[in-house]
Amino acid sequence: NNGFMLSDTSVHSNNPHDSASIKVHYNPLKIQSYSGIITITTDESSSNSHGIMLSGTGVDGKFSAPSSIDFGDLKLGGMSDTMLMLRNLGLAQLNITGYYLTDPSGGFVFIDTIAHVLGPKEYAWIKIRFTAAKEQSYQGTITITTDESSLSSHRITLSGRGVNSKLTISPSLLNFGNVDSAKTLQKVLTITNTGTSAATIDSLRISGSNMFVIDSPLVAFSIPAGSKNTIWISFNPIAAGQANAKLTIGTAEGTKPQVQLTGNGVGKKDTVQHGSVGMTNPIINFMEVTPNPASNNAKLKMGIAHHLEDVKIHFYDAAGRSLGTQNIGELNEGINISSLVLPNTSGVVFLRIISGGNLVGSTEIILLRK
Image 1 (cartoon, rainbow, N blue to C red):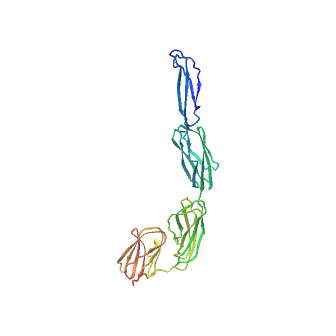
Image 2: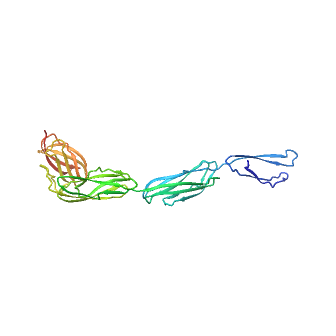
């Protein structure tokens, strides 16, 4: 079946006890079994015809790899590596003769192309990196050449997309106008993501006047591309006059858009009935119990100069006897509102606010029990 050929038969005589060689060429052109016979005739007096059986099997390497790699969406400035498996499904050793990258978009690069020999049924890995410098789609092609007898050039398409979030805040200036110093006004900010990737808000912080308070929960949240979210801000003037602050919105991507906050307190703050803060330069600069006189379901509103931990409220009667303790826990800077668990009594009740064992404020109320 045309797999064998005599390539050198120049030997035609052999001296006594001598030897000589001829050459047979084997060239399999297909993946199949081959067989043949060499017949040599001599001038011997007997057995002057000799047959030599020839056999072999044609094998080849067979390259296998994914036809495409999609790196998906990648944030601008990000980097993504992937391992590409190269396999030899054939029965012969496969030699990789070259790696070629075509990348007009400039997003892909070879990191490791050490694999050049694959034994029968073996595999190896190469590494490719994708980086996104622009907000766009990326396309590229890897061409791998081998020593296979056919189909010795293999193409693998590469794709990926550079994406980014883009936040806009509306309004950029939140003006509360004139607000009575005994009142609270709440307004909303809208955060819109006009980018191509989700944005994660991981912090909200107000610097400046402590009369502005973030009413939205201080937990991380995500805004998908093309979506929006809202943040509620309250202005609670504890004194007359202009107040200014700045809201900084921190993102996981590192950007920090800011919003200016402004408002004007007018009028005079109503004093708490029979109560006062009771300290010079207090940490708690404003306290109010509502309703007062109080019964069930009373609430304590406090303006806190800075973060407090291990906060407790101690209740005393007019004679200084303890009426109980209520654990509050942590209080954040700004306006805090806590529900009160009042003692079962009537008359004047004194409240002492303790943080970490230190007195930080006090007031009194008229407690009514029906």
